[in-house]
Length: 236
Ligand SMILES: NC(=O)c1ccc[n+]([C@@H]2O[C@H](COP(=O)([O-])OP(=O)(O)OC[C@H]3O[C@@H](n4cnc5c(N)ncnc54)[C@H](OP(=O)(O)O)[C@@H]3O)[C@@H](O)[C@H]2O)c1
Image 1 (tube, protein in one colour):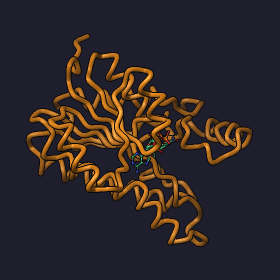
Image 2 (tube, helix red, strand yellow):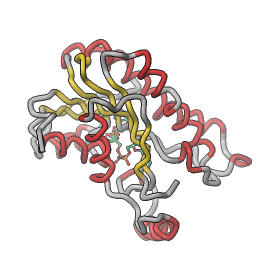
Image 3 (spheres, protein in one colour):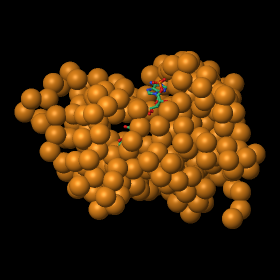
């Protein structure tokens, strides 16, 4: 196997835990120069011990993003794995204010990160977003998350046609065992994963490393652009 990422400059926005951290580790294993971002300096400190470069950036702050990319560019590959969890529940009882907050947490920070990074991505480089299978899975209680993630996924192929010098794709994960689920007490999380596992053809929830594999595939394959690929154990 070749090493397409050797000495390449990679930024993983939202790389201090979960899927982003797993992707950052896999890029580093391929001898890339990896910088991860996140809001919490303690989480980043832990990652720095594993040899990753870190930067405290809140992706909802456009000025901070602009000065970060100005000082860190040029970049070869950007991965955006920013979390957002608000907006779950059957629509009849869904607080639209909470759904709005869900968009503030994930949709706008991702758009800001893409737009801010664009002038600094090298020709032949790539952007990979992490969305969510709720965009297409048609599960009750997820219409808010479907709207949020679907709004991102529908932009990807259009961006790909606008951006002919670089590629842009998204990975759409199913249920993955990360700190995203830490809002549930441990026992409840265990039960929830068990219930999902019974409905997933693969028979279990996903591991962050498996989603990271899909991210590296999209970033490394020069013939992939404008695509959203599901990585969900067959859930959708
Ligand atoms: N886990 C799942 O079951 C699942 C399923 C489908 C889709 N996804 C999607 O996968 C993506 C990654 O989630 P995950 O499961 O890996 O969650 P995670 O472990 O909570 O990781 C989220 C990362 O994003 C960072 N982050 C969040 N908001 C940020 C902001 N405004 N600016 C900078 N960094 C920010 C977090 O660090 P700080 O908090 O320190 O900022 C952390 O590094 C999310 O978009 C999520 O919606 C997850």
